[in-house]
Image (tube, rainbow, N blue to C red):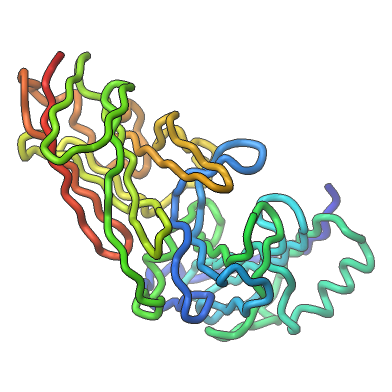
Length: 324
């Protein structure tokens, strides 16, 4: 594909400032979380941002989450992201706003000029100066369903300056500004050594091999949506043996979702079933503790899985394992 670009040179201050960003949509709620599984596009991948409801409507204002200047425009009806705006912020991070139906009036002249010159094709423009500035809360575009979006919504990402890492946007946003909704953490099913069971609190399951290979179908239930979770801890007889925190994604891992998800995971336009693997033989960026191979397994022992979501909800799910 042809594109139009301007070389960009940026000097930014890499300072961690969390909770200073606002949601990109007023009075909204989250409809998809960071690092959920996606099978759209050419290959399975991670959802590298957070989706905010625009109430299934196109044309809802999407606003700058923080003060910044225009770093990139992507004019694209197709692809994964569709029409996209990227802002550079003084704290060293970039914010990304995707699936837009149209851009803000401030950038209309540039967009119309480019479309007039290059036609209806993917056009990527990177800006070398901070000439086009957006204040926090200023409209950068309007909600849509360009790209892979099946329904109109606002897709929002946070990346570092070089865009080598994506971060959980909800670690940056003041979540008190979101619409209050009922929510809770749940496990629906559990997989032990490839065999699936409906989870029962205190249930007894068998395993074989050197250690049990556990996967869980776990969610945050929010406004009748099933969302991905943030953190999972696995305890064997009160000993922490496995721990994942889904707060950062090196973009080199973007197309490797099966590092985290069991192959039973399903994602379609109508169904999302996400099974988190609670074991790994690789040194993965989101695995904080992996002591499965060091544990002295007995014939029977207690297991507790502790799950936390990005909103601070916590659930504890006990069961027993017996060597078969």
